[in-house]
Image (cartoon, rainbow, N blue to C red; front, side, top):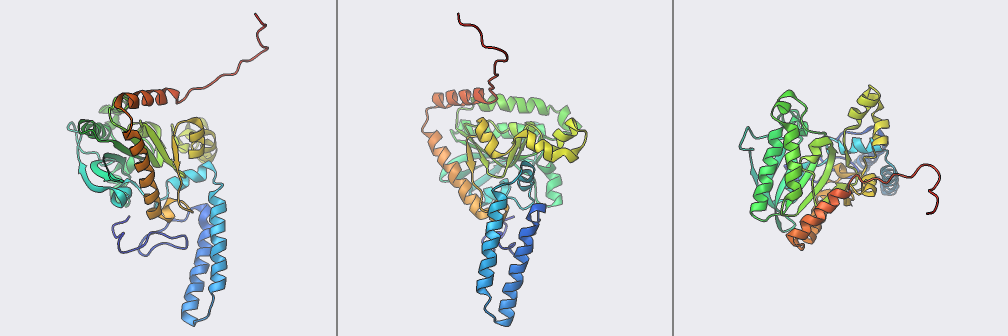
Length: 347
């Protein structure tokens, strides 16, 4: 996505950068129409030499106001659509943007190298770390090679191998989460995908180095959990996280994926909901119009947040770090049931 980051600018609020495809979501069509009008007026101003700056300025203000209003009140289903936007930055984009001296490692030493999971050493905000993240791919060939970001058991075993290396060299782990779930095929089941995720849950809970996770797009099902145990779990403002995708939930409950918007509403999968439930620890704000409109600004913000949490966790003794992680995991999913019926008589 940023192969020519030094030569071109990222997508702006007023249009796509040259050479980069843009996909317009249904609720963004009004923005696109206004952007086209602004572009037409700018071209007309250049061609005719007429001064249309005041009109263009007013239209830009209207555009920004429209974007701010809409993105301030997205429905859960619209949030899912933004999290899946084809131009949204992925793990590889963030690695290219702010990870210095990245050295990728390959393979699980058992079966093969799963390209749905990327692992490697690098520096983030000056800190030496081990990066583990999902990879979805950009074009059709990459998506097929990466199984659309759905990892096989060898992907989770590669991630665990990387995290054990991090523990050996006393390096924090940074996990970038972006998947609809683990790969659901027969081969993955035959090679023990459920077992590989379960092992990762156990081993990450006991890993003797800090772990910072960030849901950068989609965080669904066991595919997310396989690298999602963390001392600090961050979530981008317009990402989503759930035990199942809205379509999967709708197919089970209503026998049709057309009920996905209702499922998204019921699943409480937005960053705001999950922060209230204590599932995540920090919401990372996105640029106006979401990360796909300004990926460079998003990368700067994410790097700073990750760096801050890494520095805070580095100050903790290992035993205290593990105890806090244990207590954090025990709190997730705790519910309080109200008593039904009249109160008990006094003793």
